[in-house]
Image (cartoon, rainbow, N blue to C red; front, side, top):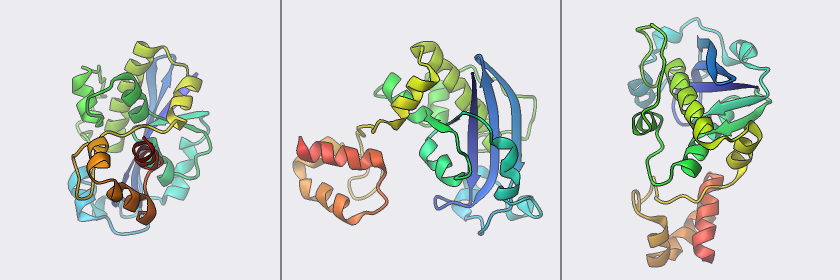
Amino acid sequence: MMLRVIDTETCGLDGGVVEIASVDVIDGHITNPMSDLISPDRPIGLDAMAIHHITEQMVEGKPRIAVAIGRYQGSQYYVAHNAAFDRAMLPEMNGAWICTVKLARTLYPDIKYGNQYLRYALNLDVQLPQDTTLYPHRALYDCYVTAALLQRIVQDSGWTPEQMLEITEQPVLLKKFKFGKYRGQSIEQVALDDPGYLRWMLKSIDDLSPDMKHTLKYYLLG
């Protein structure tokens, strides 16, 4: 069974792909690395540039994502860390998507779930190629970290791709706010102290994630 781990870097949270990369995990082995810089459909935001260090000069003359995407297609399963984001960036990908954030939340509760945090918290065996241009927040580098995380998850859980897909599709009960006036605080506690805020979020914020909607309804009904 082949699982294609994929990652994108973008112009910002609203999209605009500037880099795509993937590696394949076949029978537990990482192979077939691919990466492309992409000419985006909008300027690269300075906040994004400060994270991935991909500049306008680097993507000048590079193909659009619609041209480059072809060689990344064709897998039955795609795996990404926070798959909802990469899936939204790559609507051309028709396979099923597996999310390592959701898998990690299920298997390793009560820790943080950033890729680099999990790398060190779980002491992942990340085997990077001898390429000095790879560093965190470049797409191919992040693919190797996610692939190592996927290997560990499969080793520790024994989950099949079908089971991982089922977990991915289930809503997750979130614990803390990552934005807004209660950022960093327990959602459960805010529900007790200020339930009106949760009701306001559900009514007024259109782009809440399915997990956040599930969490807010859970605590309001609880």
